[in-house]
Picture 1 (tube, helix red, strand yellow):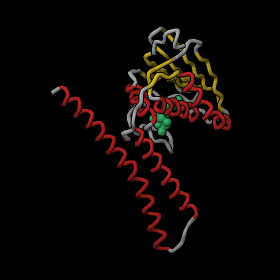
Picture 2 (cartoon, helix red, strand yellow):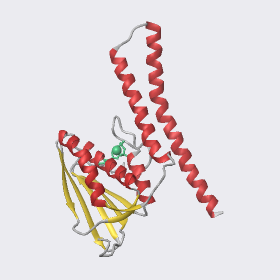
Picture 3 (tube, protein in one colour):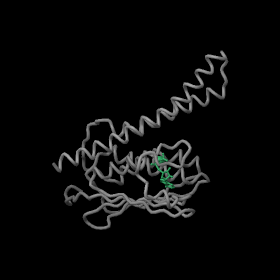
Picture 4 (cartoon, protein in one colour):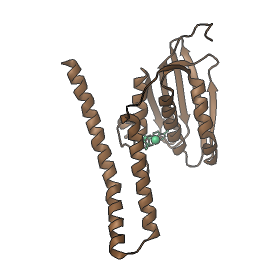
Length: 231
Ligand code: ADP
Ligand code: MG
């Protein structure tokens, strides 16, 4: 019975999420239909309307792709990987774009190896989601501090801290729920996807934030103990 209960709870969350996604997609579809109908009636194309239609299409695309990360039954291969390498890859991927926005990444990587048992692409997805949020919180530019450390032999900790606008207190209890966003083109799926991935890695993710000061996200994952021979 417990197993059944657990499963029905899970189904329920997936059902709610699917309903949310459907709703979020229906809105831009309605707009698209409206503009197409208008063109059909007037036999005129208005460049502004085309722009709007394109951005509505982009929005649908974004919601669907973020949702697919969760829904896709992708082959999951957990492997031993050093978080320093994974984070390094993500940084070099985002660095030039961040630079354009006046963002600087300040890295402090542990001297000790930070190996974890992980699905590399999923962890990359989490880091990208969190770094994008940090960048988006600083429209005027600023610093993002990324610390990788070994608080003890059992754990690897990843801190991502920005000096952005911070998260309003009333939003804090709802973080990680789908479609919680204060951005015009946000989906509110990034934190939820990240939280689920970290849970799937038996880790925890905590968010501290102060409006006007900044935000810190701390992820803690079980460390893989490596013998000296393995390096
Ligand atoms: P999205 O980025 O699409 O809005 P997320 O799930 O990534 O969705 O984030 C949800 C909301 O949490 C954001 O809209 C924002 O209000 C808040 N948030 C998350 N990270 C930060 C951050 N580093 N600084 C300020 N606000 C943040
Ligand atoms: Mg986001």
